[in-house]
Length: 206
Image 1 (cartoon, rainbow, N blue to C red):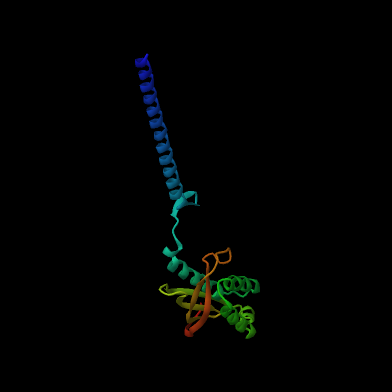
Image 2 (tube, rainbow, N blue to C red):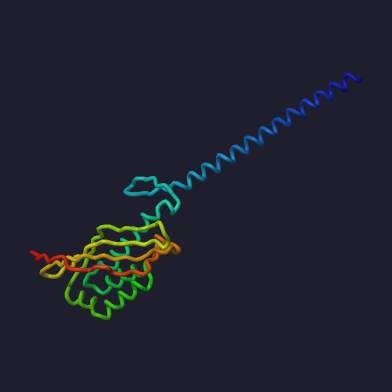
C-alpha cells in the first residue's frame, strides 16, 4: 500500500516537473518570438521602397541629425531658385515667390515688397525678360544653432537681344520649424541679406 502511494507521488512529481518544464519552454519561445518580431518591425520601419520607372528602389530612414547639412543646403537652394527664377508672366512670378516666402521669414518678404514697389516685377513682364539662377555652392555652419549659411550663385537675366550675367552672394540663418507640404525640410530662413549682386558681363544673343 505504502509502496503504491510512493510510486504515485513520485509519478506526480515527475509529471509536475515535466509540465513546468514545458510551460517554461513555451514562455521562452514566445518571448524570443516577440523579441524577433519587434526587431524585424524596427528594421522594416527604417526602410522605404520608392517606385520609380517601374523599379522598386530601397531607401533607408535615418535620424534628422544625420542629414541636417544636406537638408539645410537643399532648403537654401530651393528658396533661391524659387525667389530668383522669373518669367514675364505675373502668375508664374506670384507662384514662385509665394512658394519661396513659405521658406523664409519677413526679411525675404521685405525684399519682395521693395522690388515690387520699385517696379522690378512689372519691368520683367513689360520687357519680356526672364531670369534664372545657378547655385554654385551653399556653405552651412551646423556647429552652432541657428545655423548660419552663405549662398554663392550666378544670375542670368535674359533679354531679347542680350544675356546679363550677375554674381549673387547672400547670407542668413536657419531655424527649425515643423515640416509641412509648403516647407518639407522644416527650416525657416531668417535675417536674409544680399552681400553682393554685381554685373559680370553681357553676352549678345544670336
